[in-house]
Length: 224
Image (cartoon, rainbow, N blue to C red; front, side, top):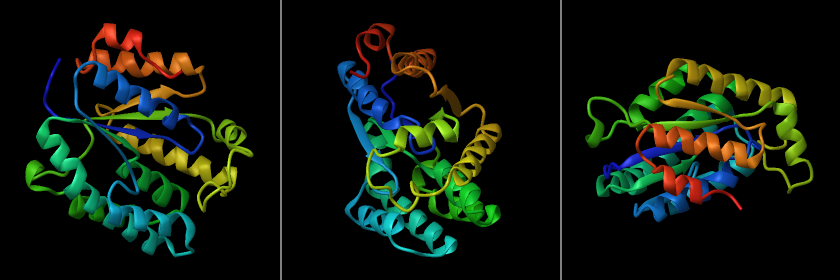
């Protein structure tokens, strides 16, 4: 198994089941002897968590929303993600930039070229010059918005995004599909409509094929 740093993002609309599996994957890597950094976006640092609370709860226009998310991402990259990768950790991140293109770009209808410019500015770090930091793998939990809405119904008090209508989440899903088409080598589509066990099998099979997880460890682990 490789011991270089690995960056894996979990993406999908609200209700797709990402949270069910990200901690299980962290446990599987830990059982294999890997150091794991488990984090999220927006968030992951004290500053970014403050910005997350604003984005999720305060009314604002789409440009302000995008700027706050990218500001949080910059701090998160410099303070958490880059140092963890430099140490050789496996970084598991609940959402990254694909979510911005899906939610702000697709859902809000915000200007795509502006998002691309912000992506180039914010995700350029010394470790990846002259490129920008992207995940090594993005697990895309693809689920019909109507099914996601049924899963979320009554689960908790919705935030500013979760309270959006199904039509909003259809645009978000379309945004994710567009990002997946643009980077097919990075994306692995997970059929999130399947059972929890079947979803886990899809995840571990993807990681075993890439040489990041052993067959034995993947078979012994999984969501409970």
